[in-house]
Length: 346
Ligand code: AOF
Ligand code: ZN
Image 1: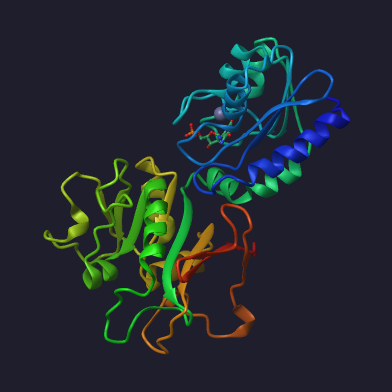
Image 2: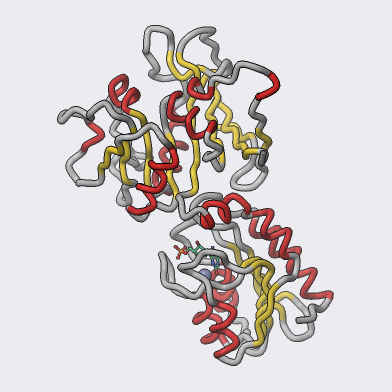
């Protein structure tokens, strides 16, 4: 398929829009609708798992503005999906809309969602991909790796002092970060499918691992609460809860944990502690992003946030880089900083 200059410019714009979404179980996707002369009619982007897809968002904003998209072109950074997941298939929404042509960047490699381009073509819409495909793939490389590996996307989250401690030497850890930072972390819990901790954290802190609303009430959507490790979780442990959304996976191998969670339908897991479990995911190369709430406070001793990583020599140091997408690389939250990092592929 040949692409016009207007479509190329629209794809650049769609990639910028995509970056406004929140990283996680879903790819970052942006969409721009052009009229036949190449003028922008409407734009949209995907805000994160569970919300409207970019195409549906763009169609909705056109409809809200009373704009007719009959005969228009949809420029989108990912092949439109063809499945009913948390929302309906974009391929069908586009067919219903009267859009005449769809230009996308990268193909959708999620086997559940694939087939959108073929469905559009079969429905009489001209559809073709490959425009700025590398840029789109780069934006979603970690999502694509999780998809290809049939495993959940992994966010490792810590709440630490400036010197990387998650608890003092006597075991106390409440509270290193501010109420604002803790509320922000609850926002993450409400977005993921599962929250994971090790048996050591369960014994030390007896956490609930539930998602709470800003007012402290229990959130409507609860993540699966998962514990990894061999030590049995006591019958009275808070993490067991009463809703049946609890699993203990008796292994120390992050890959086994992810396979098990994927089989439970989990597509995004947040690893929340402690240092042994976080370190194990980093060592295995199975951490897709790092969210480190960092308080301007020092302990000089105590539990290290990534103790399990245990690298002894500079030659083997694990370097990360700032991730500007998904809410910014360093964002003040109350008196603390939320640092957002991505792994450098090795
Ligand atoms: C699109 N446009 O903006 C996105 C797509 O659970 P769901 O319903 O949100 O579906 C998630 C899958 O849909 C995701 O894994 C990917 O294959 C596709 N994401 N597709 O057409 C979008 N975010
Ligand atoms: Zn879709």
